[in-house]
Image (cartoon, rainbow, N blue to C red; front, side, top):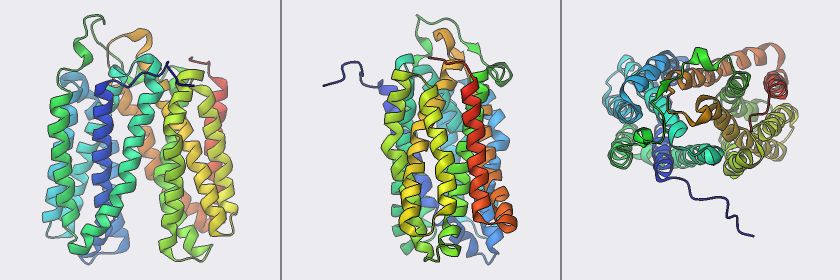
Length: 394
């Protein structure tokens, strides 16, 4: 039976989904080239890894500034400005002549990254109809995911020609994205005469809300698990525990992505129809159980299965968490400047992504891989319990 209660997402949301795809595919194009390019300057593996970390650290440090910029100038200028900064940073990386330049230029890209991330999240808060917030968040995340999957494939081909080529390609993709979004997102919904005058929503104000604090816990889990522990530990687990070639780790990571991609839109629809809490609880529990499962796997087939199910948990949880944040910020349909609140929300996820690999690595050295994955499960359980204790938003 056809679902007549699911109208098409607004054009502005679809434009943002396109932008998310272009940004992610460009990031994925650069990802396989960056550490290899850094090593070409005859530096250690740790130094090459620092180039990757510098981007994330810059995002965390600059997030509060990005939030204030959104409040003062509006989302679209900050969004396009952030994209142009990352484009310039990418081009500069391609022209770097030594390691210090590459490190500095890559860190500068982190500043632009947090600008377009915070501004895009703020745009989604304003332009997503209340009954479609879960779907909008799921579509946005799906755009990022599909780009992240396609990017490394394209980047691997470009690397064969030149280590600098992926950076120039990323620059071109971002400039194209600015041209498209700058035109199609002009004169956004802020001028809607039905809505009241915009009010500023600060992080200090919304963090008093139990739902927002629970969302922060979930975002920390997401950063720790998705952008930290999975990427940092699973490839090492494949080589050191399962004794498989390092190239096989890509299969497990692809399984994570496939599980997430298969359920992001489903999770969004579920959150819109049945409320935010249930998909978050199911997703958090799934991430917790599968983290333990991964630590106990003894073969690649089992690891791929556990990774796929773990990705499903992430896909169910993420859109509902983002929709819950929007519910708190945009309560009663008021027009808001939400950059500061969203910047704080983003920072918590980034902190999880930064410290997750470091802490998990230390745990591996002292207690083994299972202990590290068990710690990840315990953190997901904390988020699960937090959501059990908050009131139901919808």
